[in-house]
Image 1 (cartoon, rainbow, N blue to C red):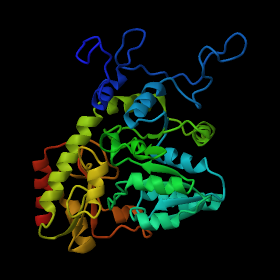
Image 2 (image 1 turned 90 degrees about the vertical axis):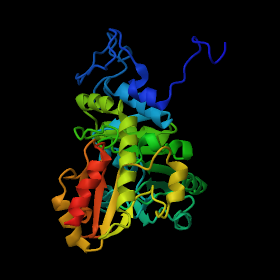
Image 3 (image 1 turned 45 degrees about the vertical axis):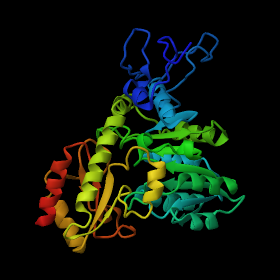
Length: 386
C-alpha cells in the first residue's frame, strides 16, 4: 500500500479535524452532533451504571464527548475537560493542589484570575508568588525545588502581550519537580500547541477564540497525562459543580468548526492594524508580538505558527484622556469587554481592572475581528485624528 493509494488511512490536518468536528456521525447518520439535556441516567437492573457509564450530569454529559475529543486532538493531549467558564477551568488547577504548595504566576495575566489567587487562594493556603515569567532568569531563580508544585504561564499575556518561551519554562519547571500550565487563550491551538513544547496542561477561556461568537461562556483544560493531578481536577469540576450546560457545549463545538479561518483572519488583520499605527502621530507604542519591535518577537516567531493572534494594545502620547477619547469615537470597534469574537472590540483596560492594575492608563486593548482590515484601520484613524 502506497501513500497515493486511495484506500490508505488518512491523517487529517487540524484544520480538517476542526471543520468536521472529527468527522463524527451518530447512529442515525447525523453529521451535526445532538444535544443530551438529561441530568440523570438509567441504572442497570443490578443497580450499576455499567451500560451507560454515567450517573449524573454534574460528573459529565454525553454532549461533552465530541467537544472534549476535538480539544484533545487539536492540542495533541491525552484528555480534555470543559467547564462552566474559563475561571472555573483555571481555578480547578489551583484547587487540585494542597495548602502550602508554592506556585509561580506571571505579573501580567488575566486580572480576574490574579485577583482570585491573591484573595481566595492565598487565604486558602497556597503560597502564591508573582514573577515576570517572560524573564527566564527570574523564573529560574524563583522556583523552589521540591516546594514549587505549579508554574502558571499566560502567553501572549493579556493585555501587554508579553510572550514567554514555553519550552524553556517547561525545562525550568520540570527541573524543580513542578508542573507547567499554560493559559493559551490568546493564541488558541491554531497558533501555539503548548503540550508539544513541554507543558503539562493547557487552559483556555473557551468563551474567546474557541467559541468565537461572543455567545457562550465556557472553559477548557487539556492534559498531557491522565495522572493523579488530572483526576483531582476532574473531582473539583464534579464536586464543585463547575460544569458546562449541554446547550453551551453544543454551541462551543459549533464555534470550533470555524476556528482556523477565524483565528487566521483575525491574526492577519491585527498585524495590518499594528503595522499601520506603529509610529503614527499621537501613538506612543503598539504592543503586538508580530512586530519586529516587540521585545519577545523572536520567541513569538519560534512558538507561534502561522500568525501572532488577534490581540494588540495601543498606548497614546496624550495619556488616559487621549486613550478614552479614541475609545469613545470609534464606530466599528465596539466598546466592550472580552475578546476572540468575530467582531472587533476596544477597551480602556485600566478602568476595568481597577486601582491595583499594572496596566498603563494610556493603553487601549483591541480585540481585532474578521472584518475588512481597511475598515478597521480607517475607523481607528478617524478616532485618533480627532
